[in-house]
Length: 88
Image (cartoon, rainbow, N blue to C red; front, side, top):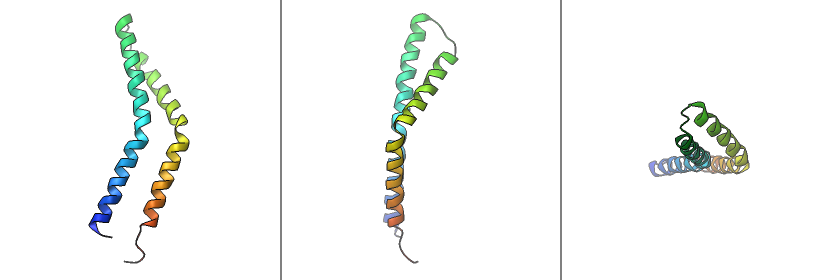
């Protein structure tokens, strides 16, 4: 395996990881922003008011995007195994 080939596989791994984490992190960001605005308006500063909705939103987004996530992971793993050189 050449250095260029290894670098390309690492680059694909990083891009795949970023794409798979993006929907969950976006859900956490949006819900966190909404709860922060709600806390600022109502002047409630309880820590659980910001934490629990984020966890619920992240789990919901994870379940919603699970088929796409599994498809992307299988595609990446198939690509990696197909590109393993036969013999050293």
